[in-house]
Image (tube, rainbow, N blue to C red):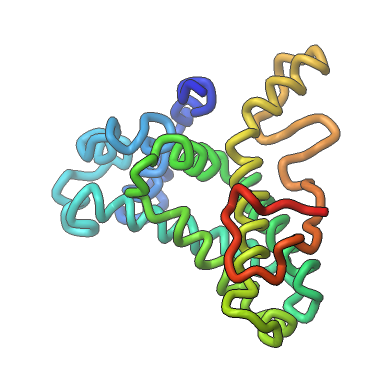
Length: 228
């Protein structure tokens, strides 16, 4: 899938000058990483977009790699806050997992730059250099680990199938969203469908999760996780 077909153009407006210099740098980096890719987003362009000096980027982040790591941690923290507010930790594990997936999707629906960056990361980061996906998966495990049913579950890794299902539901749909949107536009005969929406099936309205068939397995490869 060509990246140019799934990555949005740069937003018309740069980061608000009401933000602190550090926040503007982070936001500008996110926008450029999303639209141009990490390799093509130079620190000079990030500084120009954030209306700051190169020296200020060095002062706050040290290097381009450390800046990306800061962006990754910020994304996961923001999404985690949104997702956790949607989860009833007293619910059965299956219900909590479904709520968590919907919470992540709701958070992403409101953040087009995050969606574009995460989509590009999934498609381009074949060497696993970006940490955002591993951070997100670990966060999913930490949240589900607070559910009483998970605490009582036996086996060496009872969270493996559930965390994998949440991860695949959120990030799998994220990657496929452009194709779904193009198909929906073709079916609806519309050329103006907003990004992040599919007629009759909003981005945040995925089916709930069901108990994995491999729920008792110690570990489940992502490609083998499925529902009844």
